[in-house]
Length: 213
Ligand SMILES: [Zn+2]
Ligand SMILES: [Zn+2]
Image (cartoon, rainbow, N blue to C red; front, top):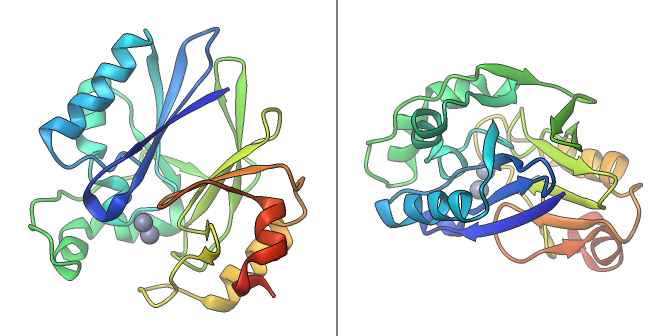
């Protein structure tokens, strides 16, 4: 599968469109657009590549990663898929927005389809496997494409860093253990596409990430 990255203004969130170039099916992961201009950027990309949106996936339900959920739902008729453990965060979008000093104009997001460890999401001929790595939020998931060697990591793993664990439901111990036990065993060449900042690889993080020593 192929991946397109969009960096949007709300905390520099990376929104990804994962698509199968043959069937043209695609998933929108973590729609973080919060302005008309940012919504247009996604729509133009979908139209230019003649894609059919079949999935809306949230790696977790922090407000920056779900700010565009309602737009994607109404525009493409898909429903949010996420881990059950983040359901409460979805309900509390407005409170989260206030906590982060944003306008309180974010409606709650209700998860329509629960994703869990080991689930496989089909996008045309491609597959994203769900890996549950709690600690940044209780329901944080990583989406792994084994065939094409990449993962969308949400706020679990970044270049040279890991997700913050001081937010409600966070656990530093769970996060570090989850990364070490579930992500580090994957091939070194696996490309990590994080929720913020530049991409990296499992090999690079194994060698140099100070949080995983
Ligand atoms: Zn987050
Ligand atoms: Zn984030």
